[in-house]
Length: 478
Figure 1: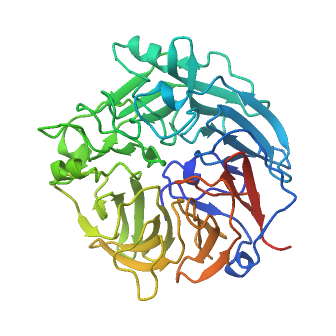
Figure 2: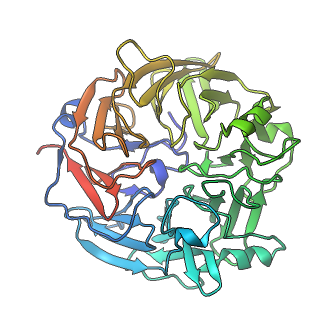
């Protein structure tokens, strides 16, 4: 099975269902045949304010018979929508978002909440990063909201620049952006940062840790060189023990300075510098020059189960079109990997999703495959990864067009796998494919307002697709 398993229908507290970013949602009763009957729920209103890049989340309080879908937008609006009918339960406005003109580069206007928040089920709290504009300029604020009514929790928000200055670190919100998903491990919130589209200014890749019991005493790790942003929509992945991040290209680095890399970080965020704790391709300098970095997707922890026992692997997918299999306990340093294979015809971005299949892990990613079976040439590629020794093969490719990120639903964690993906900024349709063969099961009508990297959510027996100013809901026929 995959570390962390799959999200149940009762909660979806993280980007891609769980901290390992597997994207495997358990939806009891959603078999292959029922997936064919999926229909858009015309009675679901799902209205809120703002452009949407973050994945919606789902929360059902203990003892409650109903749940809420949480959306956080670029207008700095957070809304809780009734999962049954889409009506607004509560909404919270967090301050003026920053216009594109406030930054030296970028491609989102206005800029508010981009990275997917995270829910702490233990205390019913939502954590997020919002870019807020005030008289002093744009600044990152870390916010904690009660899921009961959207109120700001005591001791929050945290001005990130001020918190980092208090520990002797310099952080410039003018050139640091936050688009990767947030994560929780233990009692600490982790937030990744990168730069803006255009690589302007002296930005770095950052991971900031915020102890929930004392949120003003932050800890941090950052890349040594300029650049190396942590910008993948999946942000930080965790196997429950360590944190894994992928960095983008560095700018003007003569010697390797933490770019084009996968890092394993301990919860207190020290980094040993030893080769067991990082991987970078031997041709990192060439990748820097081509902007072909590893930072476009999050690392994905995998466990391959077979008769010989369980084998742990870490998958990294690059804009250089390669898939890298790594040993998560010994990443190997510069130029070391278990397997490196070209798997795509173009750059790989967004976030992969995975599910177990016998003695293999099946991984779906958005991107045109390099080795698709004859007649299959769409923007979805599915790999079959086996172990002992590790190997990568293309299983099938899905005929669709667009730049959404896939998820997987199963009826029990393994059975009836369906890969779901939107053709965001392409055909703009929701697609469902049988996970083992790639057989198309569902193709919806075009949807307005989808944004690239957008990720569906499976919860409460439905699929939810976030778009600008609204959430669409889909459900199988009764």
